[in-house]
Image (cartoon, rainbow over all chains, first blue to last red; front, side, top):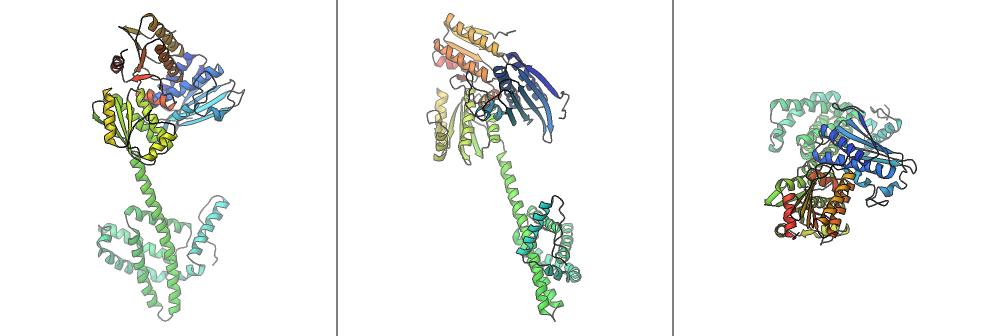
Length: 140
Length: 306
Length: 119
């Protein structure tokens, strides 16, 4: 991964409490802004990070969000990597369906997050946690 | 001389073989045999001599037609084109028909499309050459008409093959141009029009894919903020192909507008669109709709009043 | 450290202006304070202003829905105002339409709405 601007390559946030959720999305938003993302896209990135961080808090108790600046021929982008060692998701395809909920909340917000981001990939095995990698490209 | 056509393609063996097969097929389709290829080489010497003359005659011919002459406005341009044609001529009678040859003919097709030279002009030009060449051949081989015929035939086969390549590419390039233009059109920003205080009109035109839908929504929402709109009229008369995906996008835009306190009226709904909306579970009650714009604006004005 | 969202009272109405992104705890705190005040102060209308908020995610939006429901159950009306274009976009993409919450463009419009409905 190449660097862009003066922003360090990868920034990592431990997620355990809900104020960590706010911190992570603030970080994502700041990075998006510094890369020249449009205002709507800044908000979208922040929201996506918030949802992913929230899942970590709600379902795994703790985990990590890594935010990195990425580059390709089209320009710069933000990569978000959310990982935890929690119980994992048993039925991924169901979880990626709209309206799927495991109980007390609106669900994992995964299909929505996928809609928000340009690129989205998720992997999970029951008992082995969840890994989501998503990216949004700068379209000023 | 063997029948195998040389290939300039590098890459894996399977590719080369399929490619060589395609070329062999094309040659077979036009009935171009190895001996045909040899045959026309006999013209090499003559062709160079005659090319210049024939081409001059050709341009005199062209410039007498308005339609064609407009493509050849300046001296410099005409000379360049003439030189290119001499080369083309020479290749016609002596070049190996291989991938480089084919690529070159395709390139010519592309250039013609981009220059706006129509197939009619192109084929007409080719016909002119063949006629002139035919006379030259008959002249040179007056004593052996059968040979002359064989030679002419060989040339015709190859020139037809040539034309098919150029024309195919012409068509491909044409389609590309059309697609590009359509894409440009669809990327034009959506106009957000303030009809009167508190009322916005957004005429949605073209295809509504998720990318366009998103920009539409952003424009719409920013318009609501800027004009402090209370009602938005979304006119979809000009939307091509409304299916459930498009219907979903529209519903999303309207939900977002509502979050900003603006009601939406969907106008220009055809029967099939109404059907698509019903399919995704939206009934008339939840949605303000109208068949035409006038009606829609009336509904919108009433909504502002509330 | 919880940031307390300022809640103004104007006659029988409450206006809560959220200044920045709230954490879950902060929004839950807002929820209990508002619902409490609706009862103890005889409030008829509540406006929650989110014009300074950049991100509303699933938790915030669900809680706002709950606040609206709770306010309604206690005999008052709630209007959510000031959702910014970026936030509206994100909510809708997440599938959160807040369809059971009344919305308005800004404070003025929100007040006008409450006036019209007699709240």
